[in-house]
Amino acid sequence: MTPTLDAYEKAVLDRICAVCVDRRDDGTCGLDPKLACAIKEHLPMVLSMLRGVSSDKMGSYIERIRHNVCNICTQGNRDGSCDVRAHVDCPLDRYLGLVVEAIEDLDRRETGTALASAP
Image (cartoon, rainbow, N blue to C red):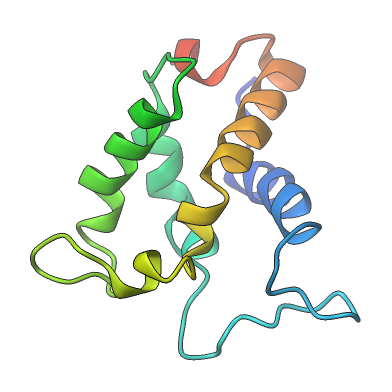
């Protein structure tokens, strides 16, 4: 059975929030309130975009995210650049490797398959 979006969100946020540089000492999110957490905001699209990527190189995942997710993100610029990403303030860009790992780990636990081979 394919995990629910809530299960993916929990798996990803459990992995990311524990190490996020924006996390406060009390465990709450300290991300600038003017910035939405790109992981939370775009997780459904991230899941969709990562389907079918089968690579041991992060460049394949980064390319797909930049082309499909960053292009519609409100933080980006029309030319494809992103000041938030350039300043290493985009959680999705900063933690993409951990996002992919969390999704693949959940897929393996729940379905016995990795992200790339899921339907």
